[in-house]
Amino acid sequence: MPDPVMLSGARAKRLAWPSPLALELTGGSAVIARVQELLRRAAALDTGVLLLARRGSDADGLARDIHGRSARASAPFVKVACGATGVDHALFGNPAGHAPPDLETVSADSRIAAARGGTLFLDEVTELPAAVQARLARLARDGEARVDGELTTLAIRFVASAAPGIDADVREHRFRADLYRRVSASRIELPPLSERLEDVPALAERLLEEFCVAHDTPPRTFTQAALALLGAMTWPGNLAELRETVERAAASTDEEAIQIEHLLPTLQLNRAPAPFEPSGTLREARLRFEHDYIAAVLQHHGWRMTDAAQTLGIQRPNLYRKARQLGIPLTRNSE
Image (cartoon, rainbow, N blue to C red; front, side, top):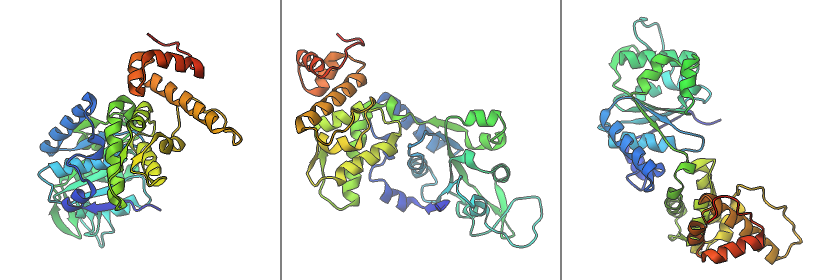
């Protein structure tokens, strides 16, 4: 069963992130530049931040980035997985004895107490039980609690992550509106990778760098063709899916340059793959791959032949000929 909490400070953040930016912020697309600016502003404001992140996004890294850029960087960063079993005990502990009802009471070993003066990151905040939401809303409103009976100023900054559907949860009373207001003074929506495919090669290169550091191996690279293939995929699983693909490909070979053939077993192309035939020849396997790869590149470029040919490193007439040979229909905006 996963541990619902994780506690770290500024030193752990530096160790976890070799770059000043969270991994999700890698890239030069206009959409991620906007997110970088929003995070910079949110870090300076020192108010609640709501990160709208889809499945597979690294909201944890973004929350740490906000904390590390803020005036609280030297104070604790405490993460709570809101959907974990025992989240109420993790947050509030088990305070002993009777306490006046004027304030919430927590124990000194609780995550609330640990986050004093720092940042409390509520990961997947809509997973919190209703009773826990009510207690947190009260804590956020009062800014004080009794910690093992002692009146204590908390001075906690709340950062939360949620799926983009949190607004419907608030409207339909599945998530408390008062707690929502406390954690959403700033709202930042992280775009899916499908909306920033131009960033995928840079993300893949950084993931590969982190893999090499983690496994104490010499630096490695991707071939340009391999990066083009990664940039042609849509990545419905977002950064988590890209990370898994990079790590599996890197683990499958000791070669300095990761090539297309190292990536192919880890990828799911958008079209249904041709049935695998163990008796097929190497030439037949290569033709199947060429079909899927060229179709993916064409789809990525909106079936614009000039752009696709440039990515593939071939002349446009050769791309037309290859598409006809492989039976790829050119039905969309082909030039």
